[in-house]
Length: 74
Image (cartoon, rainbow, N blue to C red; front, side, top):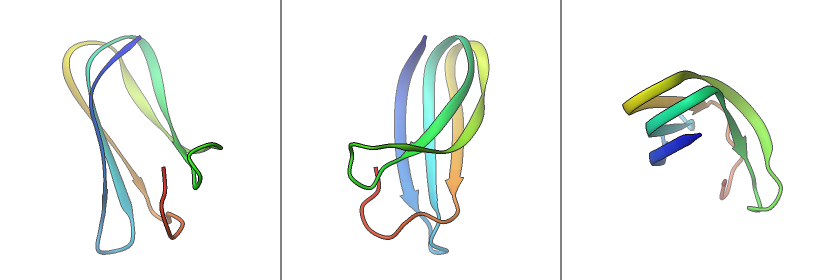
């Protein structure tokens, strides 16, 4: 299980989107799969990030979407 702390996405001036997230605790967590949707209903995996595995305390992660589609993304 993962205890979430915060998730945020920020566009850059280069047209990328940086997704940052923090967890408060993780237990037996191997990875995060980053997904994207244009309609909020159907999601597609666009990347992965290795997880800490087991942790107590705040852990920071980030992922950069280098070519996000135009318009609203979820």
